[in-house]
Image (tube, rainbow, N blue to C red):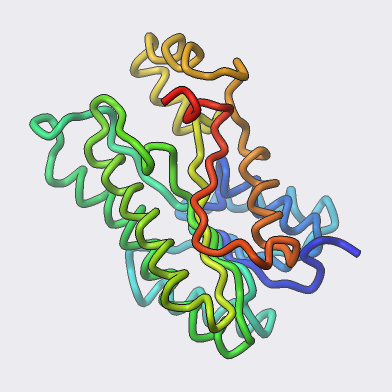
Amino acid sequence: MKRVEGKVAIVTGATSGIGAAQAAILASEGAKVVCTGRNRERMELVLNRIHKAGGEAIGRIMDVSKADECNSTALLAIKEFGKIDILCNTAGFFDGFKNTIQQTEEGWDELYNVDVKGTFLMTKAVLPYMLENGGGSVINMASIAGLTGTAGGVAYVSAKHAVCGYTKQLCIDFAAQGIRANAIAAGIVTTPLLEEIFENNPEEREIVFQTLPCKRLGTPEDMAYLTLFLASDEASWIHGAIISADGGRHAMG
């Protein structure tokens, strides 16, 4: 039997990077997946990939910072598949390496609207359905930046700390009712977002490699297989955890 056979998942930020890998791997292991994102063209590519592999998925173009769109996405999952078992809050935004003086209010707001508010709103939208169904797994995409600091990352670092704190609070509030809330503290993962950062800051690539004991960058699939475990019944006693998946970087302090 496949590891999430018969389960229904919503994956935000599913049109690229980690979210696309999560959607594909969950579908390959038997989940019916609602993929969300903002880019229609990339959405079609993700859905085609899943369908060609024999998986079941639908797409929805939406903005996680809008409560009505989060609510309608949850309703779509219920209408199409009858329940919601898994929520992957993976949609994210990055405003570059900036300190407090350099950071703009607009960039701060956009990052928080997606990474923090979006995580809250999407979770709020699905929780009633999960509770009605006897429980579920919420997997938030955090970062090792949510465990420590990084030079010039004021908005991103503080937002990911907020995601980690929110994950722990979800556990405290809802674990007894069958909701498992956990977060992945992702390290340096090869995504389009990272490539954009390296393109704008070429020296960062070599600096990053010097901080990785395993001497390779992570892949979206590395994060997706951890997601699969957390979504499965095998992780039934893991609650409120912030799990580092970073190639050993956090071990270096």
